[in-house]
Length: 310
Image (cartoon, rainbow, N blue to C red; front, side, top):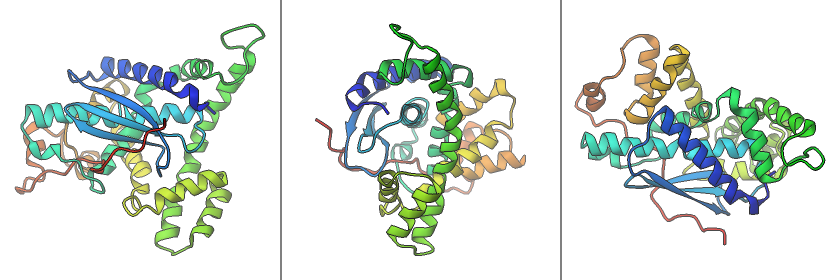
């Protein structure tokens, strides 16, 4: 776990590292930027409030202790190449260059949420390629003061290396267990199971602590978020299939389309089925081709910022 007092410099370092990787891989719109705050009393682990003019405010929730591997995921999800980069590029390309002013409206609980959350989860592979994950975790642990080092050393030793290997080995199983949140939402809202029953199931099946199970239910039971649990895993699964349908050396270019084009789940499925070729500018502008407006962007609620931790 990362001590809260160590989070600001660690997050600053991670954001800049991911920003540079995104610049090298996808490019950055000129003038984009963001700031990060630590907050409490929210149902989510992180949130991007897109302010427009290529600027974002990113809130990280410190109600619960933050694991180092989880911090990597949430920072990539909310910043580069996730939500911030997506919305900055879409404002630059769709609103600025193409004058599609309707794309300046960001809506929650629309089909585009599946794309937005899916790409934000999928983008971790570009922020942290597998061959760099161990070195990134090792440096993160060092900066956060986590785990043992060799006596008198400032870098990693055998014990730290084992901690890094363990963290990498546990990441996918932890993510798989986290997907039980979808079942928890169905149990709560479809089956009608009560709060205590679902919390117990989260503890027993997803192996969550009581505190994490309660926080997950806070998200699931939020009126705006009750259906939102589905878009993360389902969106990532859909886009992963689409991304991996092309050779590895073409995947970065394909992912960039998610950042600069207004693709819908139906368009992604059509391409997977071979029913349509790559979406060109004219098709992207015309949406379904029936004179309807294009799908709305996700995924932010218009509202006041969270209360900052002081």
